[in-house]
Amino acid sequence: MNILVLQGSSRDHGNTEELTNLALVGIPHTSIRLREKHIRPILDQRHEPGGFVDVEDDYDGVTEAVLAHDFLIFATPIYWYGMSGHMKNFVDRWSQSLRDKRYAFKESLGQKQAYVIATGGDQPHIKGLPLILQFQYIFEFVGMPFAGYIIGEGNKPGDILQDQRALSAAKLLNERLKAPLA
Image (tube, rainbow, N blue to C red):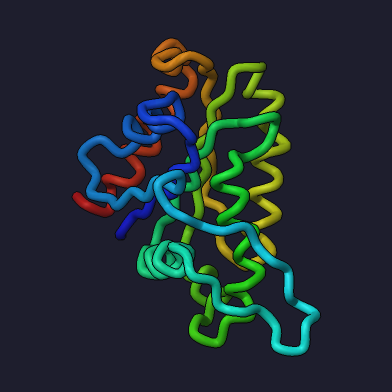
């Protein structure tokens, strides 16, 4: 199984990235930091005569990486009770990919598994659940199986190391992902 992490954090070495790294210790994977990619916001042209117009940015490269992997981890801090702007901007562009004749986007996503890792500082185990539900609806819409999620609590860098519940969940995910490698 080849794994792609879509890292939605807006800072280096934040709690989301740290929790994701703990879940993937010893597991080969590719990681894309969306903050390092130039992905323009969607210009909704679904109802225009020519449909969507190609946009010169990094979106197609990230999309091709998504399509080349079997297991996708959407890692995002919980910003204002939702996914980060970097992550949302990327997911919004899926409206374009669903209509792009170069990709069998929806069919391809249906062959993958999705997982969410999210961290936040304001009761994330409760207040992060609407974010998980949002991802569940997104994955359901594109027919992509939702393999699970981890929510961690952390505000300042390193706080995640105090959340034993999240650390245990990361260890379980690690064991699950290593099983096919054994």
